Image 1 (cartoon, protein in one colour):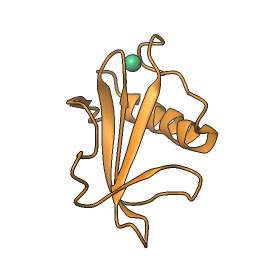
Image 2 (tube, rainbow, N blue to C red; image 1 turned 45 degrees about the vertical axis):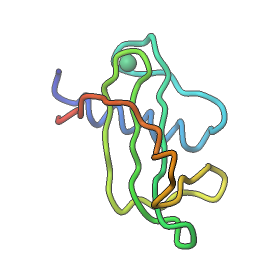
Image 3 (cartoon, rainbow, N blue to C red; image 1 turned 180 degrees about the horizontal axis):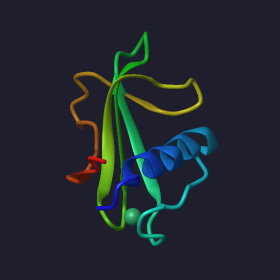
Image 4 (cartoon, rainbow, N blue to C red; image 1 turned 90 degrees about the vertical axis):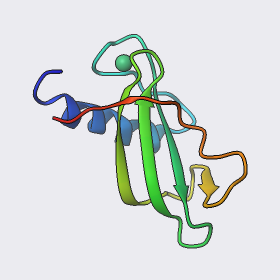
Length: 92
Ligand SMILES: [Zn+2]
């Protein structure tokens, strides 16, 4: 992984959140789309944000993220789980 990948991916992740339900492309492989899921408290909408590329399966995880009102939130304790696949954390 190249230095700056994390920063570039996070910029696309924020674009994907803003544009939801429209998709944003992965800046690392240019093949996949940036997916994300918020898993958090149903009322405060604060929790985890997991975001990954559905092609290269690289991504980032963020804690204490606040889910905007226009995107879905999977509430803590949901029986179906958060729905994120295994992916490699982009470290830098
Ligand atoms: Zn990718």
